[in-house]
Length: 341
Image (cartoon, rainbow, N blue to C red; front, side, top):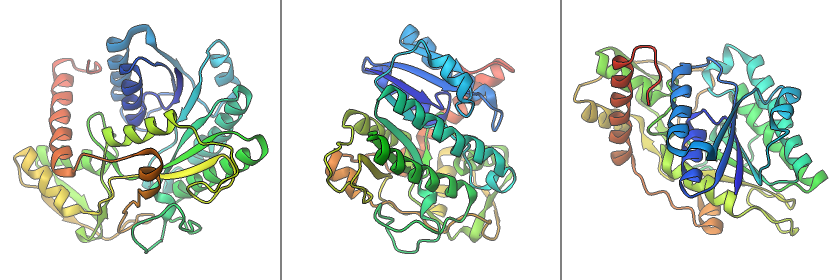
């Protein structure tokens, strides 16, 4: 199998590519390597894949929101599936730079739908638990109404789901949207809480804890996220007129990919303190605009239909992240300015 992955230098893209390549598939990855966070980390992820898998992994530096350049880069590539993970991420950054989200998450998503339509291949795409917005009924179910997003980021992800439904209707494309819940683990993103907290704890700096610590998250380890994505690749949605997860009768389904646990944020911090061997200095702050108090995934649909079963709890996953974090930064200190290998 040959799989095209957008956001291939990203956190989930790197982990998915590693899993697919490890089982013998070929991967074509595209990414524009923007500077939303340290480009050295993105380069290190690519270097890791190139070192371990050689010619089975191909990379194109290209912006998928520029359809002319992207289509030219892909003209000579053959692939059987698309996994569209690339996006402008981050709830809080969407308050500062909204146009980046329109370009990457709306224009870019349509461009990838057009690639899928032209190639007639199934596509799995990343949505987000953020689409649930102000929902207060727990756990979040894919059947819930998601009409009240609390951030522009969430609104763009909801829009992606709507556009995908339209393409499934008009062109019978096989599309699967995945609402990811608080992904963490080795090779994670520097803009996420677990990275920021670990960095500050180790440096003896305060960590910002919003809503005065009264927060709950469905923390999902990266290996479990990837298992859900792979299950969707291996079992494309069928165009059989039956009602799919999420309510569509078109070949378009929606799944939550989470750990099915709403963990206390303060419990996660306690695990970080133990793994770091240091006590956190906590700066309690009010709730931030665009944020939500609690996330909790109902994964019954993907579990029943595809056998998805997360296996890593935060007591196991948090120390794995901290171990990787320390090793990665140690490698940067040994080779200043160079990507970790």
